[in-house]
Length: 169
Length: 224
Image 1 (tube, rainbow over the protein chains, first blue to last red):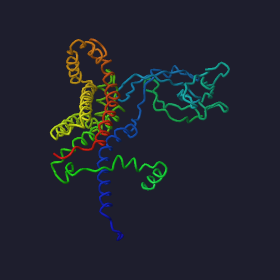
Image 2 (image 1 turned 180 degrees about the horizontal axis):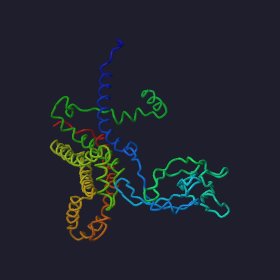
Image 3 (image 1 turned 60 degrees about the vertical axis):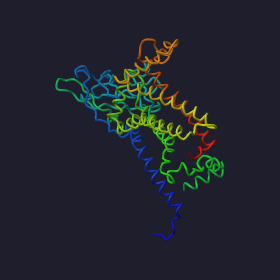
Image 4 (image 1 turned 90 degrees about the vertical axis):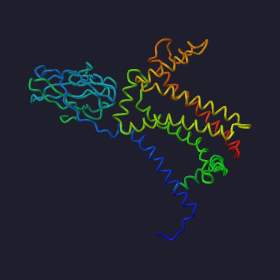
């Protein structure tokens, strides 16, 4: 401790600031915590969603598979439809690519431009991807297409899980 | 640190005189509870302002989750109260504060009345105070509908019926408030929301500014 004397004015300033700050914090803390709640709420791990598509329908050519699920957005629950491009690779393993372009998030299509066969095409800025999802150098995308975790149910129906980074490109 | 920032700004903008004008003023002995404890009655105006600040803050935060739409209003209130952290506290502050502000304002009015502070030259400030009182009642009335539950709906039905009982222009007032001559529904809710969060608070801030500028200019009325 220093032997510096605290004047009466200083003492009152410190106590009033402290008590005032404490009261203001007590008022503001609930409101701030309330506001930042979405950031702190842990995201629930996704379940696998059945697409209703049998793996017998799949081939080595990517086919468009639409699937829908119930999305709970705070107080609003709705049916959301998503798309995957699905094909079987050389080992007959299912590959399901997420069609969201890695450039700016538009939606890509398999052979979406006639001049680019066997590629995914993004119409927004002419982005191209190989069948594996690998981005074609010289086009805007900087990363390969993401893919869905896949699973096949006992009766041969394709199920899709979380979107994960591409592991095959 | 804070002192340095203050000095930096002060050097450029010379804010000390403004700050002095706002914060540095004499508190006469007869209104200081430290001298006469009964002078606490002079605190009710400040307390009304304090609760009003809490109302504005908590209201701002509530609109982060609230939707003024008949499909979603009740569900968003339910969500923010039961699912969001501290939702019950923030909504509680706004709910109880709404009643408290009326109580404080009423006590403040009684103090002004019984100390005769409304007399010349402060008549105008009394008039502005009464306008603030009406604006606060309007805020209470419009805010009551927003949770869109049964209590809100039927309270507003009654309130609009009362307004509709105005001679000659009753029907027009009803339509103006509810947005429809017959239905108390979608348009009523959006209207009440707009009035509650934009129009009345705007009027309130203006009136409060006038109230405070006048009291600062005229000073607190003398002892009894």
